[in-house]
Amino acid sequence: MTEATTVTDTSIKTDETAEEKVNWFAELRGLLLMLLAVLAFHSLVAKPFYIPSTSMMPTLHVGDRLVVSKYPYGWSWASASFHLLPRGEWRVLGSTPEYGDIVIPVHPVRDEDYIKRVVALPGDTIEVREGQIILNGEAIKREVVPAVRIPFEEELLCDDRPCLTAFEPYRAREASGAQFYEPPTYRETLPNGATYLTIDHIEGQPHDNFGPLMIPEGAVFVMGDNRDHSADSRATIPQRGLGGAIPLENIGGRAEFITFSLDGSTTWNPGSWWSSLRGDRAWTTLRPAIAERSAADSE
Image (cartoon, rainbow, N blue to C red; front, side, top):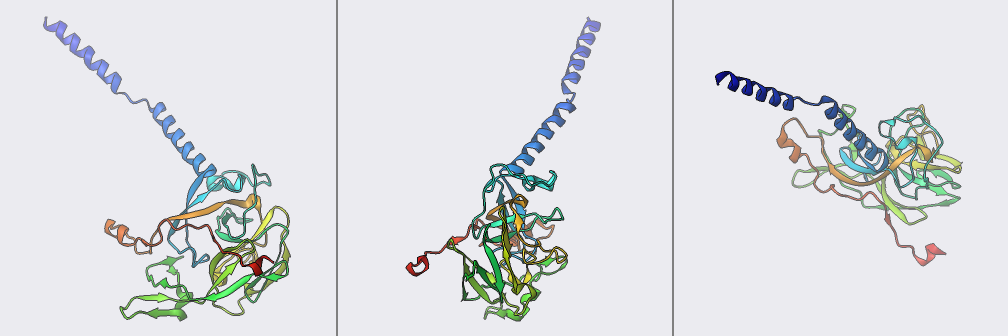
């Protein structure tokens, strides 16, 4: 009786051991499918994006995290996350950006994503004179507005250096002791009414004069909103710029909105994760406002 019981117990243990064995092939297959689904979503629908420089201030600050949609202009080699596809001139369901869109052009030589604003479309002739954009022979509307207030964030670093040292001449202090920058600010309005703020504080800066250049079909011209600190279509490739008009197949998406923003004070201490959040920037749309056109403008 005892031997029969022993045999039965052993067989039960053997069955349990078999059931507990992990099917590693199925586990790896599931993980691979999940990674492929994430990659496909990032390449075809939307992906997160991080702002590492001041080139788009005051619209975008260093530390902003945002969502970039992949489908507004169709898909090309630049749509693929991590630049997995070879470069090519093809596009699927391609369309053209609008004036004022904030887009993600890939550098003509390096697999490096930039973020800039579209200021000229195919067929336009663009020129920059002393910082003023001239489209098709006419200066776009550009007016001086009250200076934007940019917080003084001493822990905010760009390439291991303070990000905002260029604005030191414009640092101010409130009675409360809070410090901030107030650099010269302008509001530009493009032909479709898209309006946005720019910073331009250095007179005679090399990129204040450019062109004229006619934008070929299938390309756009882009500039950063921080005009004196942006390597964009005005700058040559050796200057780390984009070297002129950007082929549409080199645009990987359109910036949509900010999800959250960090001021540079984040550390490994979980308590700093909350304190470093810039609460006023979350969910800010990045689509340009459209100014109402007056009767005089429409004539």
